Amino acid sequence: MSTPDVEGLLRELAPRALGAVVRRHGDFADAEDAVQEALLAAAQQWPSDLPTSPLGWLVTVASRRLIDEVRANDARRRREDAVTLLDVPVDGLATDDSLVLLFLCCHDALSPTLAIPLTLRAVAGLTTREIAAAYLIPEATTAQRITRAKAKLRGERFAMPEDVSSRLRSVLEVLYLLFNEGYASSSGPNLARVDLSREAIRLARLLYAQLPENAEAGGLLALMLLTDARRPARTTATGEVVPLAEQDRTLWDRSRITEGMVLLTAALKRREVWEYQLLASIAGLHDEAPSHAQTRWAEIASLYGLLERMTGNPVVTLNRAVAVAMVEGPDTGLKLLDSLDLDTHRLYAVRAHLLEESGDPLGAAEAFRVAAGRATNLRERDYLTMRAARAGRG
Amino acid sequence: MRFMLLQAYGGVELEGCVPMTEWDPEDVKAHIEFQHTLNAELLDRGELVDAQGLAGPDQAKFVVSDGTNPPKVIDGPYPESKELLAGYRMVDVDSLERALGIAAQSSAAPGPGGVPIRQQIEVRQVMGAPDPEV
Image 1 (cartoon, each protein chain N blue to C red):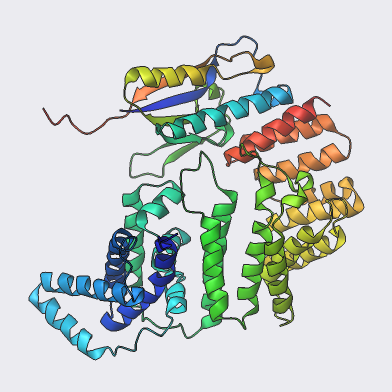
Image 2 (image 1 turned 135 degrees about the vertical axis):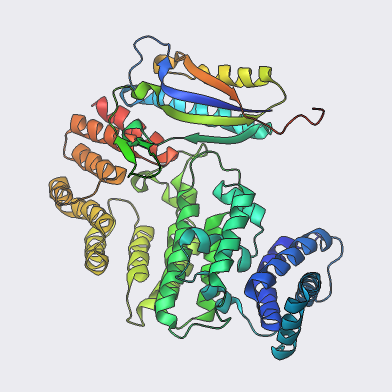
């Protein structure tokens, strides 16, 4: 027990160290590289020799690297940086810059493929290697994405954006994508040590801690917790998908559900209800239902109706069809599907399920077959193949 | 040494083997479990680099371009989809023999009634760094 949890400590300190170094030296891209090197050095040294001020250690080591780097560069640049060093006031290590960093890394000028790895490294404190393994892409490619992301941010001020609410949308979106990547992952065997959903929850907590008065920040964290609560029941030991209706509800994580519901209730009280709070409300209704049949489907259907009007997303309509079918019967659900202009495996999977419910096993088998042919996730394809086989037997 | 073990849709030698969606559900389950177990075993031995299944042949597209004109994109469905790649495993092993052994294991995946489907596996070595002696 004498070994400190260095990994956890580093991830917690990473954004604060980076914030401090950026404030001292001005350049985000260079500071980020220097902090990453300091983190790697700390990961080597700290397990046997934990400094008394870990944050101070990181800032000092990163700053030293940055200065070495500057000295190695040409004289003109050295003079400029020396000026920067003098001009930027050192406002201490107390400022928590994590939020500023999060807004910078989730900048809407960056596509998610660039924003996500940058956020994971700069804010979550993961190494390039860990991010690469989690996404099953080569380390060099990941490093290049981070470099490109930083290049696109050159010239951005290290400060909160003036229009926080519109920029918050892209922050929430990046974190939600990250969460889903971890939740739905993944094709192939999982070789990664990093759990992307956990990282997304950690970042959403950080966001919520800094913006406790923001209803959607609370809504997003609630949504993640209420969804993640079901994870232990979502797959079997061998990784097969278990649909909601067949999940062992005793495996659901009660503490996550409680925490999510408290957050959701607080968010809804603010009466600024948007997408993530609606999704969290739906997740909450599932989590609190004693069984699939005893779920408050009518409420779920009307929440999807609200979402549908808000987003116009056909995938939402697809989900509403499932809820409507639970209330009014499969035929009403099937009629709703006919109006949809969608060509995803999920449409066929839902159609197959409703056909099965309405007593048409052969129609269901055919739809499951089409769905399996279009699936892009191996686990889901296995599941749909199985359902096709079962339905085909009548 | 790295090898790609490639698996096409066709090349199943078991006679009268229908598509998997028409198998007995228990046989489907056994087949899927077999694949997971094999991957877990390779991972455990430190030999697995990557294993991926590809999305179905109806979603495959073929692209040809001369670099100037708009590219020619050919869409399915394809009559010759049996030749399309279904998935692959990449393994890092000590010898060709070991790669062939893994391919044999994979080829004997259980089909209907638990009978091995005898799927043909294409084994290709992945080009490595040049020999330092040369």
